[in-house]
Length: 437
Image (cartoon, rainbow, N blue to C red; front, side):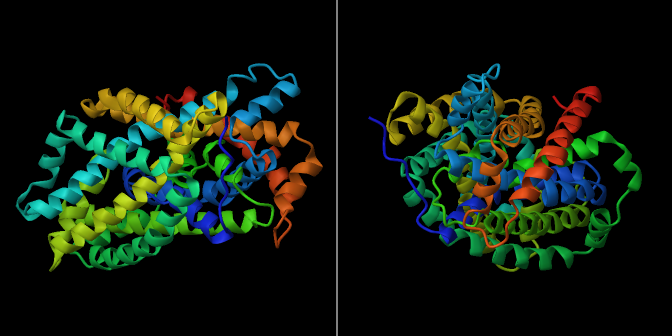
């Protein structure tokens, strides 16, 4: 017997859950990695374009589609079958696999965060060479224990259910995150040499905009950072009542998410320049710059504890959003309980991720394939179906339902004629120029 479908209790709980899904290691860890590697200010230009247009339209569409169906992504397959579309049984599972893949590498980084939190509690971090320490730890078997802890924590929260697990968590942690970030920005910008990092962020190297890789990476980051996947927020939408203003909720999500990403960028990149770290250091950038900043602050040990604790909260919130997609799909497909589905799915994805623990090259390639290819592909397939095969009047009415500003026609037209072809073109460019995989 299937469990009764859950609901968010109110609009604030939904918005905070969307923000919690968006604000996490995607903003703090992956954003700084991509920002540092792909041109700083030049990367920000396409990133802002994609967030303002693609992310907003995509999220409104994804959430409204879920609310319309009152089902997760497998419900899309049922509608595709009714339209007699080819591969209707497989396309929804592609979207599920893409988000499951994100969780697979994300939870490893989550484990790194937990380790750093414990390190701040137990050792003198100022005595470490941050670059060497991270290099010895990540990509080795030492990472596995922390991977296990992160996976168990994520599975535990998701098994509690959407209202008890997700809403309550985000009502506490989101305000704390922004307070800490604001303080760290002030400190990072005051460091000697930090101004060069600021220039890197605000003075674009225009020639990089002619490189398709800059646009490809920015698209993947814009999708990943707000949780746009064609499935994750679709599931959240299926838990919504009709009185929720979806466009307003998405606007709040995009604004807060972008602010969090920029705050992280203006902490980590200037700090990297101040301490002589390379901005294109890759996955290690967060873990070598933030401890260096804390080493320059009186009471840095306490701040380090609070910072990494808050990142744990943000990380588990995003991990829960990612895990929710395959968990909900298995619940729907096999009619099993949330707890059983959470344990099965979480365990399988943990085992798949084990090889990534000990091979950073494999980790980087896997993360790129999932974040800059699979996620946009899943989104454009699911939302392309929504835009072109669902009745126009139904889409417009669903988006406008409960909304103060009636943006249904705008979202549908942008979705059809800008979002869908734009994502397809950029994905094709990724293959042509070898930027994906």
